[in-house]
Image 1 (cartoon, one colour):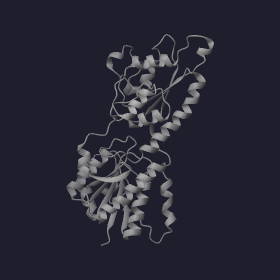
Image 2 (spheres, one colour):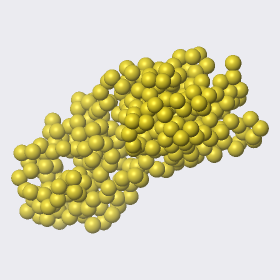
Image 3 (cartoon, one colour):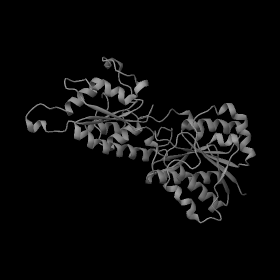
Length: 361
């Protein structure tokens, strides 16, 4: 039976979303001859009963291929508003639009909302995880993470040259309110001297001692001719131990952000004034062309989402495990706590072994 499939992207944008759309539309159209429509701006589009036709029959197939190179999402996204308050109208839209199934691409927050709506409306839902934080439970990789890591590494590479030229400490603040995957992966790959993440306890004193060792200018002229700069990668949610905050910061985290707060703390932590600069990458981390791994995972997720619909296996989330696609019940993923960095994991131990300050052992 010919089906009419809806697809939406919800929450914050990231590279790879268009790759999901491309794969799902191509597979559904070419393999099953189904109709696929996009729901613009996620639940807002459902509320307003708007759709965008995505079928490729009658087109040159190359017409949809540029999606593989595009960041963001052609369907738009939304991560604000009281969706559940408008639930009755949204629930009615699924049937009004004649949908047989819905593919939702989102992070744990947006997937939770859409899953609640699906349960209330008895929708046929398949979920796909995406987030540059890589914290969706029960999947090793979420769409957008790999490209974001490479974006941060590129920024570290660029900042390293100016840090070295001026003997400065460069603090690179990245996203990650509760999970430090992005900071940890990019910090190791970018050659950072310190990595501060929410899951590992660190102290300002310990960080200052590490910087002092790196920037030791004692000894002969030859011994002093060594690197006197440093790169610190800090997740926005990293918290230091309270007992180390003896010197009041000139600005609070809420006012200035985590990176500037740490810069203020370490600027006078030795007899020699440490010249610090802060780069907050912000939404730059979300942008850019998706890299190969994100394209592969997103394409695999899009194809397999259509296969689940063909098999009428609903209420499932696609996941990436051991280099391949698997499925888990959506509720099972949502019931789990977000995937955080294990302080005893291999990458943390690798950082310690390389002499990177990543908190107190």
